[in-house]
Length: 147
Length: 389
Image (cartoon, rainbow over all chains, first blue to last red; front, top):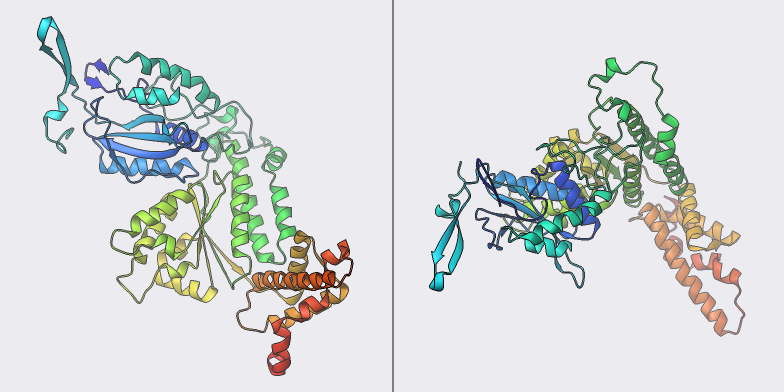
């Protein structure tokens, strides 16, 4: 996560230190996955805490795409439905001995990301426990990133 | 590495692992041509992927994600804004190179050889191919025009080669760079229309996504829409198809096929569809001579041949068969050949049991008697009037 003047730009998955990918670039990445025999899945959330691995799935994973246009089509449909959510594309490598995420990157983020506060909790023996507190998650689920 | 990286990428807070992972992947992906443009050019929202050096008329490379054209404008004209004025009128384009690169001549002559008759169909494919080729040439000097609509309807009786032509069409369009993959997805009512409320849209979308980059071939398209039942879910499918045919033209070519009369009714019931289909191609029934030619081609492919008597007999068989109900042109020919192969096998088997030596000639030849046993001949004898019709 990189702090900047407007708040905090969440960096998760591959390519996240780069400027946001354009549609053409997203399409190319999905095609790279398809050419490797990976399945395309789209997930979204309004709680992008780094420890939150359970994002909501946008439809079923697409195991039988031949061309990335189908994947991009779903990305755009998801963006339409959740313009202010975090959306990521997960390319799942189903091959034996892998069977895990092959490539994962963000394709959508809220226009304004208020960021995280670092909570320090004093513990025994001068130990300090650190927790990330999401400002956005102070709102209940569904009411975050409204602006 | 890629797997570790992404899994680790979840915990992105100051995680050294995720930073180390990324550069590892970059060169590998960049060489794959996946449009890595961010490295040298960190301008946010860069619209266009850098074009690799290369002249006009590049073959569409499936690895590269060029919607046709994007990479084909030659470097010289990359920045031209008004090609009509800026490119000199006597500029010579590389017509021969483009023609050779697309290997379109090869596909078309293959089409001529493999498809018997269907003159109108071949002419139409030729026209489309040449239009797309010229389009490519025009694009090489930045004369961008909107992609032509290539949705088609194939009408004709069963067995007239609609599916075969659809597959060929996929190949032709792929060679010309109009579609990115060239695969053909076949779908009927079962694949498209759902069983209950809310079932249809995901089902149709699934098929459409699968077909993107290629051809969606809808067999017996009129089955989708049932006018007499207003609660039928087919309406939803039709609406989605209309939407895709209009808005995703560059990702998908839709070919609808079926009997001529039913298709005509379908088009008049759903007026939006007909106007979105640019090419209505009719597949006429084959004559007996053409069917014979088809039979010869099929036998050749199977490494069989007719004996001279067998050939005569088969011709006779065909002229009887075409008058009978359920005649399905090419498909009937194929079935007839399959059955005569079986009869030949029995004949040879019995001969071998009787102690006769079989030669290669025996194995490849279909004799008159293999054909004569067909039911068609027997029924023709019983009702001579039917045969003469």
